[in-house]
Image (cartoon, rainbow, N blue to C red; front, side, top):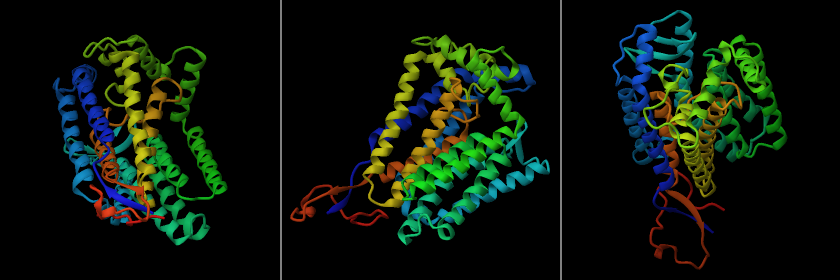
Length: 410
């Protein structure tokens, strides 16, 4: 017999999350003035030297609020009830962004030809980040219900609604917004959760192959994305440097310059204007320059420990909907960490994806912090096998489950 017991949360997930946020704040504090100076001298703007640090401080504050709201204040059973409305809102906002961008509305913020943010008086919001969270919550509910109904793998009852909702999501992100990085994260979420949902292996592999084929098609039919692929191949083969190889070459130069122990906080050269997106997508390379190989190894280790503990929590969580949600957050985090690091080390083409909890930017950090907070909430409930003759009520710390999952699982 298995019982669910309530206990303390997984402290490793808690402290690794807080530690990564703190590290990101330190890095932005060091390179923020350099970024402001570059923008002021290049574009004639008037950013204060502390502009980006203050922005990151605000983002960390809001992310902590979201993190503890998901962890302590909002029971997951209530969030699960809003799975459909959250998904509808996320899709509606993404669709609205697409429409407003086509008519050139001032409510849309565009960078490098791509319109991915709402702009509200200097404050920006990226609906694609909400869509990632919505996808995790929605699929956890959808897949759990379909599993209970016994229709997992059925074409009409399962695949049709799933393909429609996932297809619309990927269209609004990859095609409408030109955001392949977010598309990669969404695909990782979808197939990570499908992997443990009970979908027949043959169907899973067929759908994965179809999605990968479509993804390749979206790359080869886009001149901008093919330029990135060509730049990646040129870098791998040691070809002549061009404007398109500039980003990855300077990223690798930053990491190489850091050596074993780094040049120290505040001494980055690449952050002074050589490395594009130094506070966003390229922050891993800047940290390599600052902290060296040892520092990067420790940062990767912290992410690895966090992710392993997410898997541990999922393994000990009895309710399938909870296990699915944790797997979705794990897949989301893993995809962004792996793709960002591989892009900065020229193992894959540059895709424009942030490093969770470390890159500059509010929307991305807020929603992934909320998602990790949900995992931390679920870590307070795990199952344990006991014998039939064992007096459960006499055990300290074992209580009736207040969680949304069932009290027993066979």
